[in-house]
Image 1: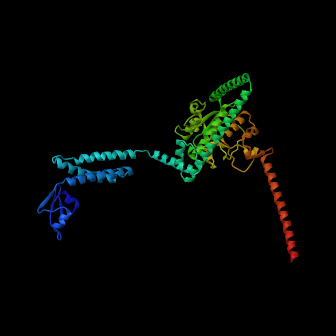
Image 2: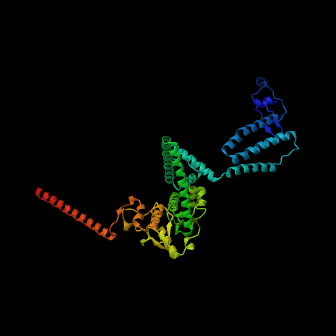
Image 3: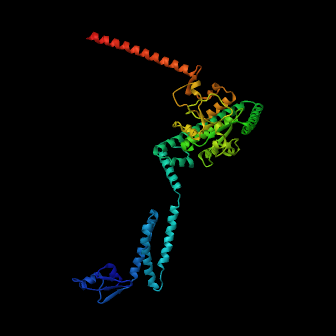
Length: 470
């Protein structure tokens, strides 16, 4: 028999395989004669038939190519290197060893060294995949979520920065994320509207300049530039003098942990407005930022607003507490929760304002801090001079600054309290508050009595009708 008999299996002989050669014992089967073999196209011979191992080697090479072309790309594509590679590599190794030993049986392959090389390659690939920062993966997932929500028609901003994306990832719940995205979307719309209004205003100004004469325009623009430059120098000179001779005013910057990121941003915006109002006043305060940390959110927000001008501000910034800088007997903490009402403005005292925007109306936070430090507290006399509406008696930081500056310059509470928003009070009080309370109580009792009399009359009418029906 030859290789053709092996391929067609017409002899149906029992095969015994060895490592190097195949020995096939020919045993004639019952029912097979010479005519059957002649039809099959071959005739077995007695004895042992030796078939060379070249056909087996070709089958091994073919199997190795199939494994390499099918298993390895599939494993690399789906990331299953750890499970599939150890199976495929020893298989290919054994096939290579068989093929090499047929030519040079003296050659040997160092399996330990080969395994070390392959393991080191796997470890490098795994380390590259693991070394990818977790934050980048979270931010990428957040961006994909935003794209999906934008396609779904939700309120999502068109442009979002890295800081805003990190704040979105740090939101504790899905509803908080939706609210934050809605806030960013509305903020983006406001910016677009402001930009559109500024462009329209610029166009109108250009049209008016074209209509006017060139000389008038030159005079007007030059005078405006000179006026702004001169006034800016005058304001800076006053602020520099206040740092030497001015009355101190302290902003307590220790409330960052009690506020959200949005509240801190609003606080910084109000402090920026307060600093501008103080710099433009006739007799400005010497502003102190106490308990101020360089790595705080306050600091990053101030740098966003002022940029390079932050280092040139004529204020005092320190991380110390105000009790370590000034004597306690001169300090007065202004808080709306204080039981003591401020009667007059004292130029010898040092007033403290809490740098906090409280949207959830947490009462007693600044009062508790002042009591812990053993400081005197005071509240503005809003009820004494204003007929207050229902609601909390909280004012913004820039409104507090304007009230204190007016009190310092004039000492008139009526002029100072004009900076209180008119939506929070009905009118100014002309009489003492106790007399107004008496008149209000009298009016309420008269209303109640009139209502009771009407109820009695209606009851009498209904009762008489029932009697007539009976």
